[in-house]
Length: 117
Image (tube, rainbow, N blue to C red; front, side, top):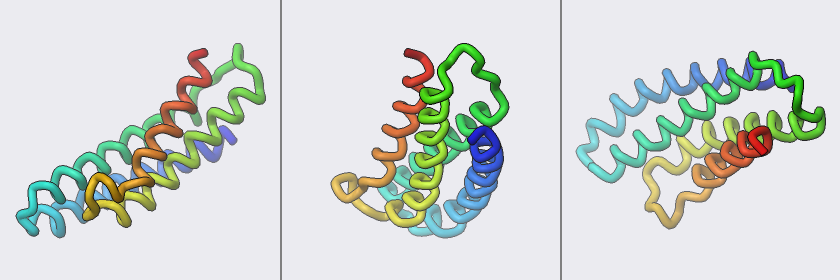
């Protein structure tokens, strides 16, 4: 799972860079402030989860149990996948219709919290 986090984090970071260009060309040109801010928030969530996956792929957690560490890494990887999908499907939606991004951020928080506890 450690390699999944490292390589997945790198892919998520590349998606982050690509979505930055997409934001500039599509969202900024629309003139809609809500759409612009929602897109930026989703973009930053993608960066956060990409970097967390890279850290989990590189760091050595020797004091944690294997089951806890595997669960934490799996949660972070899944949150990255959900964030990448959510960026493209939820950027133009209202706050009440956005379910993927809050779920992804919650999974990332839970994954990190498992290691802190």
